[in-house]
Length: 287
Image 1 (spheres, rainbow, N blue to C red):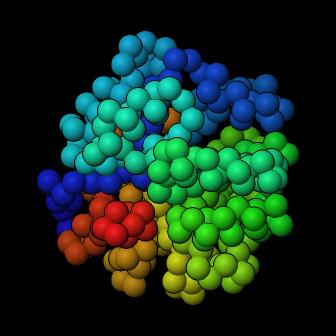
Image 2: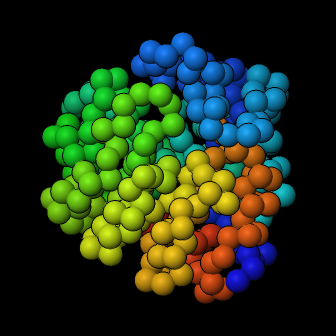
């Protein structure tokens, strides 16, 4: 049950140290509580946030690669849009894959941008942060349906935050129950949840049992806090449904993640699927 070494981990949520904390201004725009306006909007949730990397890194790509090499991460899924990302994708195509962004409030222009990202960066997936849109948009809102349809058309999954959001704004857009209707209406859509699904992780398990194309990734959680229901599911009927995702450098260091990981009680046969194989399947890396 020990975590194996030399497995070639795929991290489905990783990034680069930014020049400053303005990268989170889109979140601060919604916050009303003055006490919530940290450098990192979810800083109150994490210990030892790697803030020292922000604003000091001359070569952010090298920093992330160094950390990946330290902990056996072969491939990282990175968001598109900035100069650093473009450099990483161009110079290290063997180490980084692109995940695009969606914004349901942009309508048809947003759909055109999805195609542009797909054609320009070769994105393997798209990501959604429904509580973070301004105005907020629920996972099951009609504004999301063209996005889901476009993902199906392009043959890529969507990774969407589900559960109570860390930033201090309303949670209703990310209620896990909303995913049920989405999967019913889009049986071909591959949907991967991000950020834990709490406090509805038991419902997330029920829905994964119900819908073959629904998956769960472990982003934004230190492994010692992985929900018990998720670990139990992975060790029983859900070995093919749980996908590793980190949170470096947004809130957790890879050292913290991988140190904790050694104590996660996955069965031996679960580890390769969790750390690598399930991501390869969802991202179609073998086709």
